[in-house]
Amino acid sequence: MKFGPLPVSEAAGAIAAHSVRAGDVVIRKGHHLTQDDTRRLAAAGVASLTVAVLEPGDVGEDEAAHRLACVVAGEGVRVEHPFTGRSNLFAEWPGVFVVEAEGVDAVNAVSEEVTLATLPAFKPVVAGEMLATVKIIPYAISDSLLERAEAAARHSAPILKVLPYRLTTVGVISTRLPGLKESVIDKTLRVLSGRLAPAGAVIAADERVPHEEAPLREAVAAVARRPDIDMVIIFGASAVADRRDVVPAAISAAGGVVDHLGMPVDPGNLLLIGRLAGKPVLGAPGCARSPKENGFDWVLHRLLAGLSVTSADIMRLGVGGLLMEIVSRPQPRRGGEPQPEDNGA
Image (cartoon, rainbow, N blue to C red; front, side, top):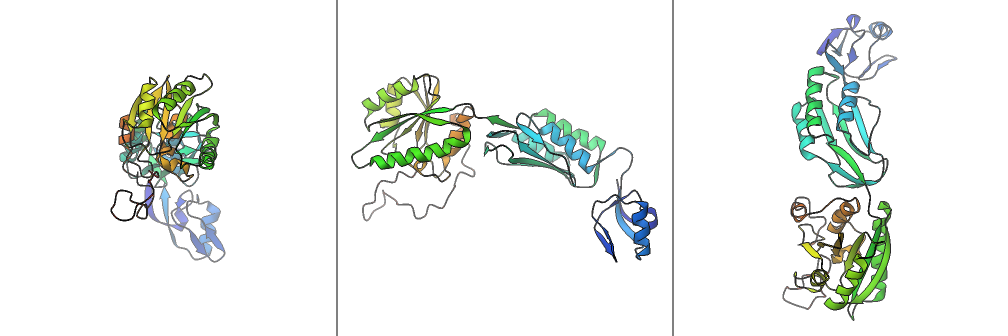
């Protein structure tokens, strides 16, 4: 592609690199100049224009953006008609946005002339939500360059996809201590219902037992083995302090496995994830009683979409894992006046 000033008399067929206003003549940036455009510009006193002229083997910005967008788009991703060198991609259905980060980096490493930007990986999305954009920087790129970008995308294809939610029924077990009001548990379930609604999931069991290993063991075993339950979530009346504490001990005693306790996300540090009867079991951190985003959300939506969440996955969440300012949070182990137990983690 040639780029630079050109006499207005020779500019027909070229692309205006910048917007031009001369008298009553207005030419928009990116406009393909016609003979009538150049005649009117010359009559208005314009002698030359900065233009882009495509050469053999060049691919226009819109076509290039659309071609590349179609390669990176996978399941659940819709490519929209391109404009001004940009092709946007949207979710076809609600679910979890999955990104092959290495593929995105590979496409962007091909050339400064080709860019691909996306939402964060594993973000819950709704139908119609914008997921990514392919933007071609100049007005055209060579076909060979575009083919290199397409090849980089195909190496990790599909780079982008939306996994639909698959788990639809959740069994909830809440433990009780004398100081915990039933209204707190009721509110917790309302908040959880709000979290589940975008995924089309519902609470199918509501069990409440004393905060003791034996009754919790019996409850989690019974709920997990119900055929109509896809996932179990436990809200403990007291925060989990150790793998030998009530919640993880009850899961293990019921025949389950505790895969990971704790996560490098705050709020959400005290999340527990395990398995029982082939179903995921979550020990919710105290912050999950609040509707504000926390680490519980990050894990919950992945599981609802049928994604596995391993110990290694959780350990990689530290970068970006500080979600809110916590300076004012009570410090229960600090000296001074006694503080109520901090279950916010």
